[in-house]
Length: 561
Image 1 (spheres, rainbow, N blue to C red):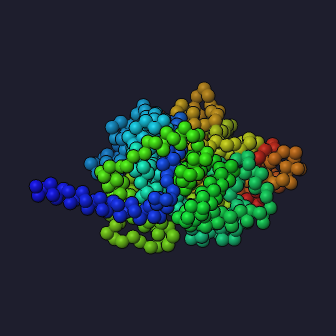
Image 2: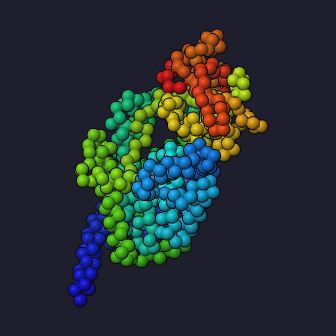
Image 3: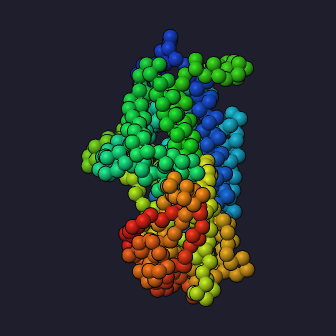
């Protein structure tokens, strides 16, 4: 009898805490008896998230062998073996991944395909909770072994959104506390992206010139960005001010009354559409839009969804059980606490969390599901591009063309979203760094010298279809969009010239300022899978035909390559 009484009192205590948290959340989100409901909102959001999971898994599937397969650039098996040797049993906490069971090429492909299947099942509302857990676990597993190729902010944003979606997935009403956590995620994502621009001290954000550079220095520019880049300077300064308004001002409207929330939703969605229309940011914009859709309540969705969908979804509502609501509350409170600490640290740099919270925060860090955000903290003001070339005799060099990043200057910049070509993206980061700090690049060179089919499939063209080259080298060039005047003068959109090395003859680059840097790393085959550095070499002249890209007058190098 005492045990039964204790259990009843415990259940009553848990219920009181859950009701208190849920009641407070209902007040914040406006989910009062006469206020908004979010049953249709939940249905729309889960469908949108399932579609984004499907895109993310499918996008990585077509690249996974070349990036982290056994013959890829950074083999997952080798990474896990190194972790196993150095950390023993602790490895399961440090690297939580299902691929501890097996991490060969087949396992990686199966993991991606399983994620696709789970996402499709969520899309059709088949066991949504189970399949969302599977999607989250599989994507976390891929992110853990994906190394630098899976280290983007949208990857962790998808994991954080996916974790919160699991709390929303059980059949029944959408808990107000879960909805509040998703709104809080949307707020942090947008607000932090704006506040880091002010906190960074970056001159281009301070003097409103950031968009003078953004459209042609972004990782994978588009043809629409070429046209927007032609706008006058005063217009682009106004766009920078608008960026601050959308990223810092509009998030503050999220927690206002219903009409204000709808204004916030419209503004944030419009802002994401402008980014989507001028850049290649894979599924990031779609995910941000999916979060913004949560600000629209059932009254709004009932006006746009088919009547039979509204009736079917609204008729399936039932209250959640105590174990489910208790689990949602506990996980939600932990997430809210650590997410708020991250927001505070981003808003006030240099502040530290309470010491007793540091250890659990570090422990949870491996799961990548409570994060800080801050896109384009510092604006890039130049565009170095790495051109990779191979040769049989170290005299005649032929270039490897990438599928999406700028290479041939006459090739039109294209849209690739929502797919993310992760090697092309990392080439952008590599060009902004130094060769000795880009740990994956020597492995990439080695795979080219081996003629790895998995890696070569990541590229647009292979200039050595019959045999791998004996040498490979990487040259650094300066790119920029052409101006309208250059287009009028040539009858085309641009011209392209290379950046010269110290050893280049001045006559080869008539009318252009030579770079004062080492623009090359070079390797040769010295055995299976092995490379060794070579000396500097003069870069060959790139195409001088009309195209989309040109190198700027007076270009200077930072001496990184």
